[in-house]
Image (cartoon, rainbow, N blue to C red; front, side, top):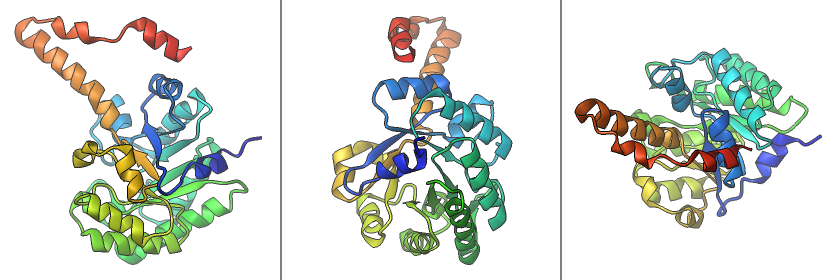
Length: 269
């Protein structure tokens, strides 16, 4: 039997970044797999959108697990769960979330150091304890499981790059397998993060980082790229633009930009 966690781990190579594509349903998962994806991930924001909710603490753990199981069953690819803050403040809750994620076949999950829904950063010591508990649970599974520790303070404005690096180093020492500080100020700051840490670093391809190529990220030592909700929001942009034209002026011409169902059918079969 294939150890999907080990397969996922082997894809993390510094300087040769894996493109881990965040998807939101079985169809998007199958499309990305057919087009060359080697690993997939859920997106808490994209999932929330499918439920008619905004991002940020609006999903329950049971909902996230059921959604992730749908993605896992869609393709044979490794899947990471975007599990926000682990669905609770306490270290044991994070550990329990790891065990439940492994039970449904996820290859790994990421856990943020930010409380939801208020998005305040956890105290440093508690943040480290949470990752240590999650890592201990991962190591006790009997098979491989990739735990990604997120330092979200740059993204939320709670702290700067120096503090993010301090937290990431502590998360690495606590047993995290992959490190992630979404949207540092620039590529130079991201390069600092990669240089300061030993574990593989994930970079979010969003905002100003969309201007950079996969080769650019490779040069500074990134090991994994994720898209967050970006791919999902492209579909919402198409819906928004088409609806604006239809309801605003009765213009249906944006519908001409749709992809042929034959192409989609080929990708899904």
